[in-house]
Length: 344
Image 1 (cartoon, helix red, strand yellow):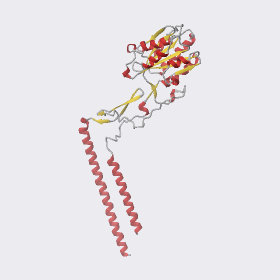
Image 2: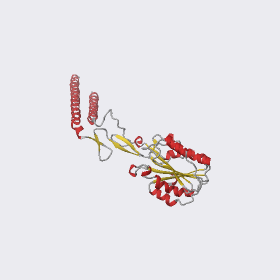
Image 3: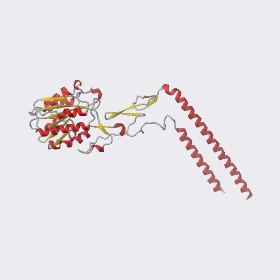
Image 4: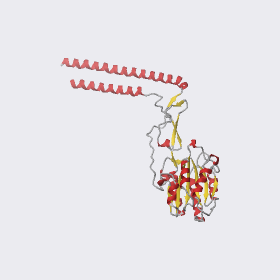
């Protein structure tokens, strides 16, 4: 008999714990914190990876990769050592590069500086904002066929193409300035100082050497780290291998897709992101969380709180009634057990 009463008391206690847990769950929710139709992406730990992929790896394996906006200038060697058919390979390489980029006034802008003993600006960053026109202009470029004045070409690119008047965007726009130099020879002028000045001006330099290219000069021209900015191919016939490598190197990251801590809306900003709020909310000083506007809160918050209060009171009353019924049944059962004991 004692075990029967003990088991009954245990069951009622367990039921009471479940009721208490249910009440806490219900009371802990707030409609402004748990919106069923909210479009907000769940918060994730935002970690960025700075590891480079292996050379020539297929770019299709990168899920959140897209072409970031660039001010991109190709500086191409067309000296006598570059044979006509080899120069055509260079132009095909440039056209393939253009195909991998998003070209436009608000996307990537492209210019070409052609050099030998003299330097010729084929077209500026502000000239072509569509792929067909840009690729047609690349196809029309002709070899200059004398000398290798690489230093002069870098100086010309820095002073005459990476300027606002030539179509380069202002520094505060945070658009990367990138120069890709393609050469197969040894410079006939100095490159170290002018390349250092270009890098100091915010230009990221990639150096591509072909066949007889002087590796020391390539390393003097390129940005750091050198193993990510200096490339070499044995012949112009395989230069197209670099297309996927550059696509991967110049790729921008869809930061929002990788994870963010925005309260409402994430907006990609080059390789980073910014947070925005939905209508009726204001971005807080932390630039991540959102607060409801005062005018919106005055009516809506009172209404939501009133509804929540009424619901909580109704729930409490229902639970109290249920517990009272169980208590009455327990008292009744206890009386019956006592009477049964007396009869025995």
